[in-house]
Length: 205
Image: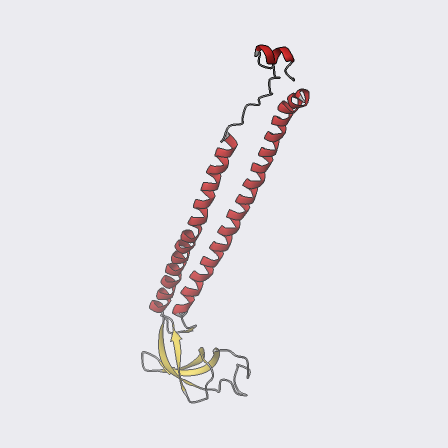
């Protein structure tokens, strides 16, 4: 509204239309606070995944090593003599098979001094008449060699990798879901605010 000549003469201030004042939205609404809390929990979860993986791997290593020690306690090894070639035409293991042990006929002296001949797992390759090693159980029967110490390490590593992958995937899924729900909530809030304020702005214009 332009001031008239009388207004300028008498010093009467011009009458301006009152602007439409929209109340500012709260700086941190409830959904923002919930969003911040959930993000904080996700950060904690990300930090906890490696620790959980380590604990699971340590438990797996302890279990595997305990089983290996139990096998060692129940088994013992003796020297035996091969009664056939291993890795040759008379062997039960084909040439080029790449195996490190095979069932072969061997003979060894038992605790009572008697000679026993049987098929037992032995390291390959070898020739008939050579000395080899045979593992026996408590009853004196041939058994497989106990797992090496590296088996416990491999078991623990496998558990750690699986835990890291599963934990990381779970955190990513939770983060994506939370972000999607938060953005939907913000969009609904903007729509409600516009439905309430938009007509006022349009009328003022």
